[in-house]
Image (cartoon, rainbow, N blue to C red; front, side, top):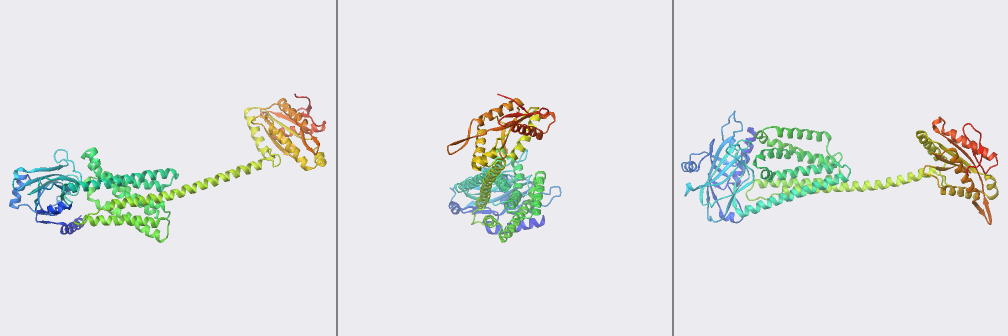
Length: 604
């Protein structure tokens, strides 16, 4: 605590030596400067009264008698008030008093800008030539009844100033910081209003840009089928957008000043979350960029601090602001060190991310300098943040576009492979000459049909037939004519009106097999007989003017699988029936059951 206050006092000394335009507690405002869009700062010595409010009459009396102590502004009154063990954060009341004089003109409208007066306050203007005609400039927060702190970054229009006293009564009950802790400034009203408008406009652009990045990142996440870098970028953008919204004061405007304390707790969490999310984002974007133990430690620390932020009192939380800033700085240093390492190792995206981070570093450094100089006020962090986030979103977009394009290429290759696989399977399951299913397909499909018939307690029939005297055909006309006859049989079978679950195969050589599910023996024999007649009456081939006719012999068998028979037994019965058909004169249909010899009769 002592070290922190010593550092703070030293910084105040540097700031005061640079910005102070006052002699003692008296400030002479240069109207010419203010007319030229410049500000007059009220940095320097102020009269101070602790533990009570001064009335306007008491303020005038204290001024004339010079009875009040003087303290530096901006500062914490904790540095000037005696410590109290029962009130360690020195909550209480105080008054600040300073003489204000406008040197030349008094016809310009002036505004007082109060970035932070903690916690609630009342501003009073007391003309020295008519002290009884004092004017209440503003009252912010609630100083009586249920206490409420004031909003920050407020502008207060001032009455016409000539020569008088500015009295600020302050009450602190919530935060660690106390009193006039930021530089008060006075400027021409229109100039301050324009600057305020530009500030809101920039923040609006920042919030809008971050919102677009959030939407873009979420879309990229869904289209990339789970690329976590896009989702983490959306979370990082949402955190920064939330912080930008909180800093506008819109929460208090929407939900009344009672929401200010809750808003401050959430704001403190948004100090540390971006650093951890940035580490996680870059770790997901660049494999091997950050050691996992560092990432886990960062998340554990952030999680614990966020939970404590919700639980601890506001004054304790605000007292440890430097811890939040230290965690953020530590994450930034880890990120910078990782970027240097990634650039050295030539990791993908490391160089362009380094450029974006350098922009943020330059913007942050510039704003620290601007905050401590009177004649330089250019703020760059909002612009730097937009550039940084746009760079990150473009990196994610390029990464995801590459992944999507690669995915499409792989999908095309997958479809080609699937098509080739299907064609290969189809080729392996079909006879190359006739296009009918082959012996391998028969083995697989027949077993499936058998199992289905067994489940349904239904019949299944098999017809096996071959071409009569096919060897003589080959010997007489040659194998090319023999092949033509096989193709003729196949085309005839393919044109036949079989049912959906029926199928036909080339069993080998000149032998063919029909599998007819849900078919009893007589129905199967009828199918075989129609095919026999159709083949017998058709021209199978021709050579020159000679027409070639052929006949076929058929063996038929049917079985109910529930009887306990096996698939091979049914095939054997049909094959035995075919054997007897060939031995019984050929060009006929024979059937066979498990108990009877083959029979030959008309089935039509």
